[in-house]
Length: 253
Image 1 (cartoon, one colour):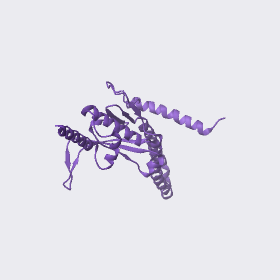
Image 2 (spheres, one colour):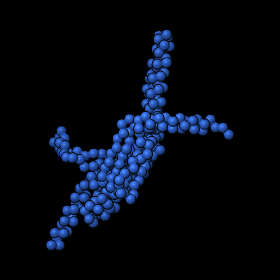
Image 3 (cartoon, helix red, strand yellow):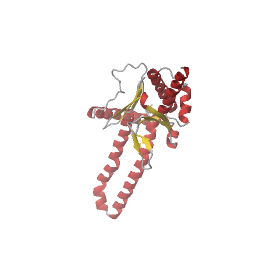
Image 4 (tube, helix red, strand yellow):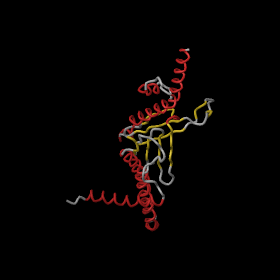
């Protein structure tokens, strides 16, 4: 049985794959996730944002389209009533302005989703996103200071969250109020539907990296999220663990 909706969906998917192929060839956008060539990691996890993130992006696209195109359409009607001949002459231009950017923006949303990758290896976190300009961020677990989850009301509706990974920077920056803040960097894993699981996995790999570098730590891994919630960063927790271990060594002597 012929179903128009299914035929339209298949046609749109076919058109998008053709556009996607042209964009990836023209802009040389990597279609596959980062391969981490040369790495000796045993456990590498590659994943994209959830489907809810795509719907989340489309919601704001339709809101912006309604506001912009609605205002332009009203202006076109007013122009037709005030100066019919000018309105008729400008009709193709006005409709092109309303339609063409919408098509480009809609395709860009899908391409951005398809080119966003998150990779967790044994030693580092790799984030890649972008179409025209490709941004790749690599974060080693040793430099991580804090891992938090961010979720707004609209994200909650779509069942997605952002995982924010804060890292140590190259120094301290003085604020206008005279306070010093850490000039760190931030890695953003946006639009994922298992944020708590990803956060725990990053903390686990962070703990493992410290264990490999400093020996057996005394703190229980399951207590790390509670300590972080109490106001300590990952770097501070590690420092306290080192002090505690040194104090135990000195006490034996």
